[in-house]
Image 1: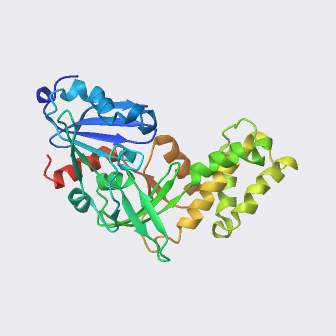
Image 2 (image 1 turned 90 degrees about the horizontal axis):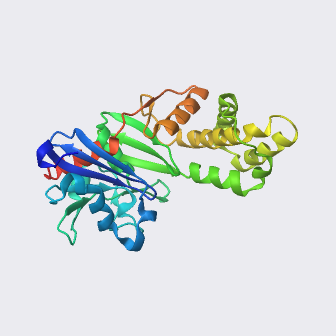
Image 3 (image 1 turned 60 degrees about the vertical axis):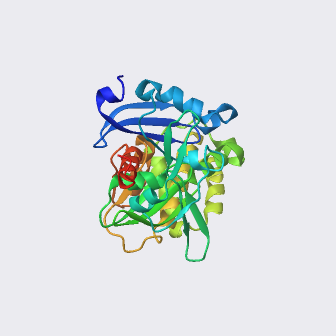
Length: 307
């Protein structure tokens, strides 16, 4: 690892989440020269010493603090370093650049925080995101597309001309963990065998009837195990499929008329799981290129004149 000047760096991107910390040193074209991945997410920052965590991470790249830092993710949430207001839809890289929150640390480092986005559904119900907007910005999506960003709180994002038009959130990952470990289903759930057939069956069950009847479908996971319809070591896979299938069915009506396969934006393991779910339902999908968050940070920084 060399100095920033020695390797022609242009900007530093920081993707700071609740449980993870990632940083990338990028040159003037957005190419990644070096990267850091750590576990010191927001929950691991003691006494709100965000500056200390950042400086220790970046010291090997930019000890003189000459490069601008663009940070996104939950670092701008109420429990993060600097809470920023949500930017309403529709918005894209230009609007996100105009809404950057500029911040100088006590040590003199310049940081530009990318804010999250908000959306009001047709009935007025609210939705919010932080971090996903930067990933979408980095993908440079042309035309109209529907993207899914799987995770603890999965996001379904409608994109037109590179701008986020609207989105909806599903607490699929949260619900899976809660139901599997803290409801009656834990009594009939053995260690998972990772059955692709069980997962696909769960997806089809969850998506049936346009995703309706989820509460009853959940209990039937227990009943099926008790009556010998399937072994207990399939319950977790069936439950995962059930919830993802219901999520997909609910999202089908979110962006009617959007052409092309659903774009999956996420880590390799979750992306593969969602792609298998789409296949089980006969739906087309494709996986987005990696490092979308860093690409988005660079695109936003360029629009803001930081690089």
